[in-house]
Image (cartoon, rainbow, N blue to C red; front, side, top):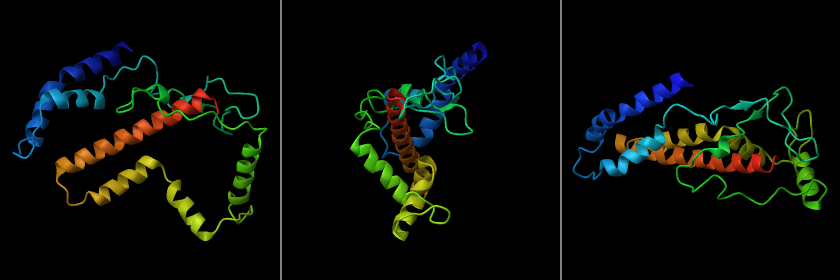
Amino acid sequence: MGGRRAYGEEREAAWPSAYRKGHSCLCSSPARSCSCSLCLPVLRQVLPPAHDPRGSRRCGDGAYNEGSAPGEYRFTANTPFAFAPRLGELTPFVMAEGSVFRPGPPHPVTGDRYTRDFDEIKRLGGDAATTPSARTSDETQIAMFWFESSPLQWNRIARTVSAGEDLWEKARLFALLDMALTDGYTGSFEAKYHYNY
């Protein structure tokens, strides 16, 4: 931990000169009005110190207490760990905290709504080759489109729509996009592990 903390402090000490170098490049245009008092806090959020006393960057936690009752979270077969159980504890970029948009609890597994949703997944979720599926071909294409990891997909879309934009606008677009994606993941994982579902 000590080495990581030292690395983080060393990196933070280098921020002002690195920031001024980048700042003078990005803000040299007369159309840009930007001050260190505005940008430096953003830089500190994007490049936090490297130490992580809570362990929130650890992706897999094999010591997580999985549930035993119906509807409680259990490890996925052949992956004996909980994925990112502390992600919901990260300090968000924009939201006040990870729980600000927490939805209500999941439907009880003994309820009618849960049964309807479960039956719908069984009816539509098959691969139509080894298990039946009532999906239309359009529904299959939509599912395949949204199957990819959100950050990969949305960053690819951003690369496409930002073609021809100047470097400043591209950097701004990617920063805003990935801040929103990170906050979305923070909020969804906060709810997932809050309900242990």
